[in-house]
Amino acid sequence: MRLRSLFLDIASSRERLRDAVIAEQSVSCDAIGASLGYQSEATREMADSIARWFNVDHVSLTSMGSTANIYVIMTYICREYPGSPVLCAANCHMSWINAAANLGIPLRFVPAGMAREFEAVIPPGPDEFSKALKKESDAAAVVITTPTYEGLHVDVASIVKKVRDVRSDVLIVVDNAWGWKRGNPVNEGADIAIRSTHKMEGALMGASVLLANTRRIDKDLLVECGNACYSTSQSCIVLMSIGETYWLWARHEAALERAFIEYSQALKNSLRELGFQIFEGVHEHHISHIDPRKVTIKLPKGVIGYKLSEILQQRYRLIPEKAGIATITLIVTARTLNSPPEKIADAIARGVEDVERMSVPEIEIPLSLNKWETLKAMEAHQAVRCASRVVDFDHSAGLISASVVVPYPPGIPSIIPGQRITQDIIRYLHVLHGIGGHVVAADPSLSKIRVVEEHNSD
View: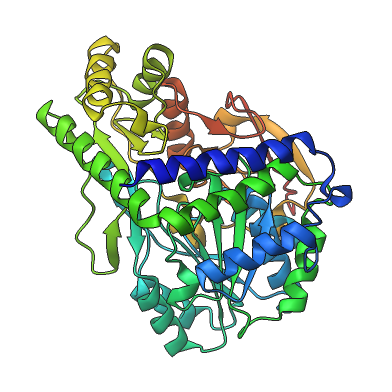
């Protein structure tokens, strides 16, 4: 790897970011230009350069995270296909549910699988999407989520082919938040994809891009939807970091990829030598590969991933991207390269020795979205518009949720609006919370939950 050249480029990037910091103010009045509409000045130049690098027709930049781009896409669907449902992979992020509920879009879910030993969700493949689209023939769009938190990549091209065989006009969207490198789902036939540039590619927190092939979509309407969702005063620093990040990747993609993969392989080898089991993917025909930069580790019996994650952060300044009941997932980033892989592996081994063993009840991770047709009492967008009340979470079984409850990460909801709450889900969430799992909810302590006010006809 030509490290000297790379480090010189990084130094140059820092110079430009320093200038952006000095000038930081509302983008609408800064010389960097606006990120709304068809963009202006430096922002437009960045977007055009990134579009050329990705080989796509259109790029939008935002400092508001992938959630903002999800709202742009769902607003587009709401305006272009009013009242039509959207088919989402059941491993979708909670932002898709929130956007659909807020914008009045009915949701249907394409079932996902689970590699239970490693707590890894397996995204649905072409056959599952084809079957779902035949059932929901009026669907406006399908939403694929790939890669997963654990790095499973689906073969997007095969899904696109199957979906187009059923309906050639359906919109195909890919949540590629965890993607990295030049290859992207739009090049594989998708119409729109989003990517969180801060996750795997190195931009500042909140950086995200929307990539589009405009041959199948109304570009003017997509831009108008961006105007409706993006702030007029985005962060100049974060926007500049997007341009700088892709400038570095354009110049050094091969070297960066090689450095990350070689380090990741060395880390996995060190962990195996210490007796750890590493997630190597699943043997499913629609899974094309597993991201080599993701390292998911199965922990010894009694070691809780959430507790180990706390120890690694507090004692070793090592931050797992995701913790589970019996696993942790690490990402090899530029910062990771500063430490020898043997040192990282040793820190994990010492953390395992330090953590207090706990007995956890036998529970299955519920893929609630797989059961939507059974648990659905009303559409999510209807539930958030009904009269509601707050009740004790422990006494909510059988009631209709008016809110979202999500173990995070990975951000796949256990409860969504319109869903009948079950005792199994209540128990699962309490167990998770009790062993240190993080839950995103209006009441993260899981004491209360908002439910639909139901009126008995008698």
